[in-house]
Length: 110
Image (tube, rainbow, N blue to C red; front, side, top):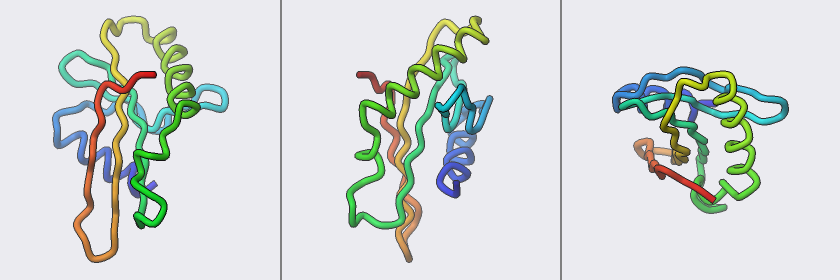
């Protein structure tokens, strides 16, 4: 949750309007839904406090992306005004005694 909170602040600083946090459809969740430059962004946030098991973005697999896509389809059904969408993954690394590091992977697809 701390990583998601930091992500929201970071996206706002980058000019995004945050529309929803932890938006749910059935058993699927989108961490952040935001928009910038008339593009709707569905954002998966992964956070780690150690690199012992790899970087956070490595934990976003096909199943997680499929859930993100399925949830986005429902969101777009409810909000059909959006013409352009994008799927993004934000990796947040919070290592002890180091500054928080962000790594944004934009326009992810299967």
